[in-house]
Length: 90
Image 1 (tube, rainbow, N blue to C red):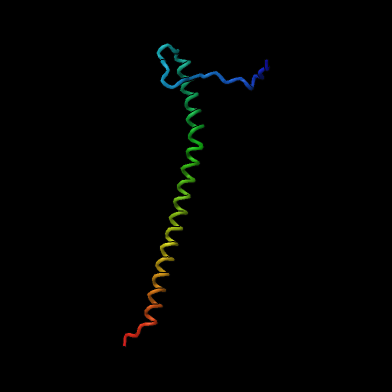
Image 2: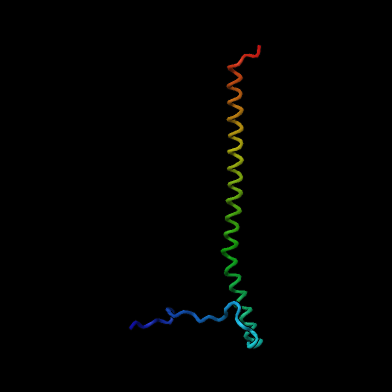
């Protein structure tokens, strides 16, 4: 049988979503609010980073799409000029 180190043990669940709260004291409720706030901040950090990354990608994609559109427009313009150079309107 393996001996578990203290760090290997699962942390006890302090709060469970939807748990009945009526039997808790004001101090216990305050502690849960504090812990919930800390957990919300922990979750918000990667969420904020992901949103910033998505917005940067959208901006970059927008720049790329604009460059592609300009390139297509330039290609069309070049093709029209090439066709016109072979055509005589005299």
